[in-house]
Amino acid sequence: MFDLLLNGEYWMAALTILALAFIQNISFTLVSRSRNRDNKKYHLICSLFSNGIWFLTFRELVTRDMTLTLFTMTGSVYGMTISMWVERILGAQSDSHIKKTDPIPGLLKRIEELENQVRQLMPTLT
Image (cartoon, rainbow, N blue to C red; front, side, top):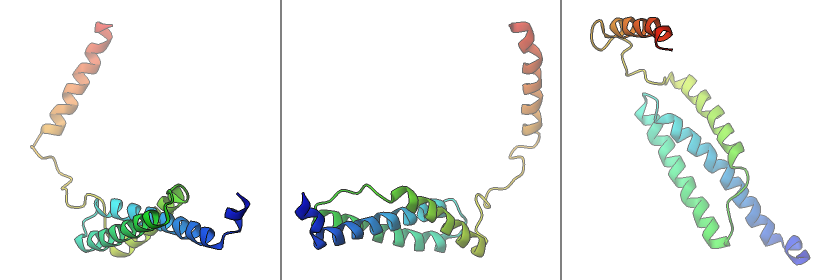
């Protein structure tokens, strides 16, 4: 046990895995958020980054025979922060390609009318 704690190679491998785990979750958050934006170039870059880090992480895990457990949540939070910063710079917005209009004229108004009718009937049903 004590030999393991004094082993410099073990600690270097552990720190490498921790760094890769952190970066992997940053890249996952970036690529996840980029899927919901209207900028294909942004998504392409994030996908390349995410897949590259995934490959490096698992290569390291296999060659070092280690498990991935730490720094993943923190990496996700930092990834979200970085993604929001990049999105603000690019002006990338969520669902900007979807028109905010009524797809069928009068549909939303009719749904609202039906909901009101149901609300009026509910007290009599209970």
